[in-house]
Length: 422
Image 1 (spheres, rainbow, N blue to C red):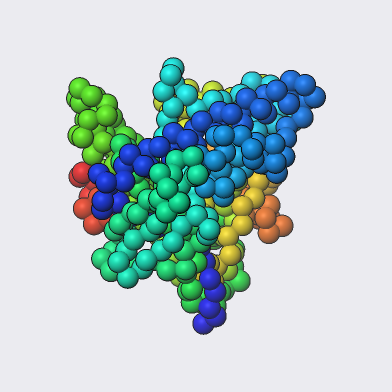
Image 2 (cartoon, helix red, strand yellow):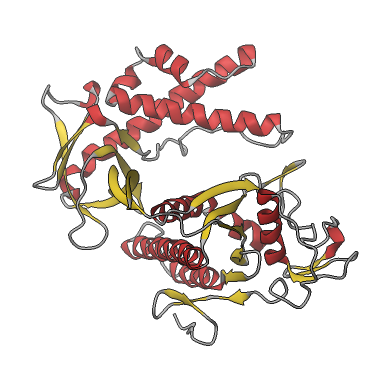
């Protein structure tokens, strides 16, 4: 087995939260204020010349501003870089013809500033692995003296005994009313040889979270479990009198943890299924523009919009990529353009052929297929330049094997083995 180094992000609780909360709050507020100063500056430049200053230009211009010195210099640089990235993304939407795309806004609600994430690079923190402590630097404006800093005692959220080493970056993130540390590390792992040279493709969606095509078989992973959780936690949270109460925060954390577990389990399941079939490359549909239509944000209906904006497409692809890498499987993101309305058997393209949400009927060759499986097979064919001309109307395209999430066992099983009780 070959060895490589991969990036991992560990979430950690702050054991001495009550002692460091005020200091972390001050940094979070300072990051929001710096963002707002930079946002105002970018607005002035845009109005004057129609151009967006780069992160380097913002850093150079605002380096002497008093808000810049509220944070460690590298933390301030990261805030400005995030703003520049947000403006670049907005400008890209405008370039694609979406005139309804909104530029990044100010981080302020009436007279209140939210607590923004604060990033500490190598020069901004020191790690005491033996005592599980991380020392975070303050900006000169917020220091009481030369040696003033924030000393956080942490516990990694994960399997018992998990340790963090070779830390590259630390982020202080305000989550559901408490501060957490996101610790980014370089971790050495052993990478297996590729299981084979076959290809597979994954079509991501809302009703069916993932549909996989192997060229001679397919798997379908419904998203009913996620919807059940969303309904349950929304109903329970509505019973809370205060949206910031301890019970509301507990429900938010539990909801987030369950979604994260679902995505981790799904990505692991897909990798295992690919390894069993000798797959060496997996193509994943790129849904980067799914929220945008030709004339602005696309309307998927009231429930569809809520589901779509709550779906972590990029996060899931990241999970799948690093899990597959360890097994020697390459993951590539490819365009999904027209895959949902094209017949994977004869190549005929028409909007009318997608009869219902889960049914695809080709008017040219008569192929009947599951719509998501048909889309997944199109992604595979387009990515490998493969085509198929056999009749699959009653085969695996029409009847993919379904895998349901079993809540009692925390894994995916065939329908006859899975239990759906919460």
